[in-house]
Length: 448
Image 1 (cartoon, rainbow, N blue to C red):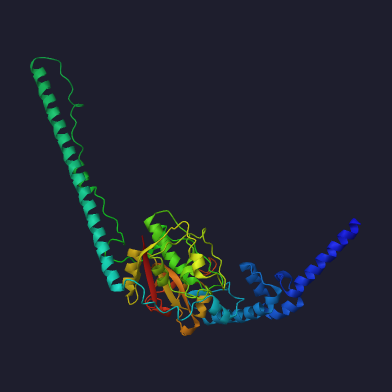
Image 2 (image 1 turned 60 degrees about the vertical axis):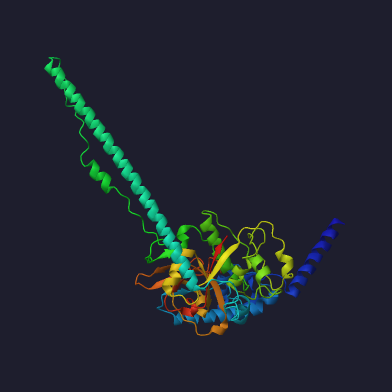
């Protein structure tokens, strides 16, 4: 009887397995594709295996033909771009979206041309006013440093005067002692050796006191001259690179990155992981489709009157639909960050953008994209954009630098995971406004 039950159970398992196979719901084993699936990939089989091993994609059987076709097309495009860009200063490699059709990539990962348009109805401070505020802030810092320097000088002067008084007192004591010894010799008392008693002042002690002055170290956030390079990562205020997955939510990661950095600037050593899900639920222009893009200035505007929570309280679960906005925005338990003001730097010069970056923290930036960007693997990115209708993307400018040959670049943080670019970052050529990086969308925020 027991054997019969086991046999029935096994038969049931086989039937269920076959049903799963027939429905196409089970995940394809890339190492054992079989003839049919291998045929779908053709000469791209080995590249597909490398892609799957690197990104651990779990593709269901029912979706495999579509994924295989997309991979072949994207892999062909990648190889053509690699050939075209030979000799360039940047490299290209496979990305995590290789099995996604181009149209789907544009519609689900990028943001639409509409989302690239700045919302002028927000209460964003414009670049001219922002520049005045930066100048006032720098002047206040300079005055504070001047005051500290003056106080240090007073302290040194007082210390020096104290030492001089002590030396004078010691000298007077020695003279008095010598006078007393002469008196003893005159009266015939035993002579005492004066060699050990003669305590002359240390040679050049006064000179050493005057020259041992500490020069004020150069601080780009206070001094007027812009440094050749600057990177907020060096100040410990940039959170780890995140992954937006297959969702047009880059604008939420871009805005959050700015707010996380501002919190860390205000509370040194405290890096918060803020909730992108809360932003999508509360700020997304489409109440039911939260992966359709948005604008960072709308995020900053919303959080002028509301508070943002951490990722732990409201985890990132991107999907095409969600419950009505109000239902997800009233469950705020532990508010962490609130915006005090936000700024639009549109129309700024490169030096003004640098100054704003140094003075007021990382900048949310919007750019148009080209195919080279999708497959960027490192180096100086200098490929122009020709088709603005393909869509845009939001990231974060965290610094800038200069190549050995003198070519300047922006350091920009992406939200496609650490395996993209240079650990999740891109070095974007500065000064040519490539893909509208220096003109289209440049937003900052200050927190309460």
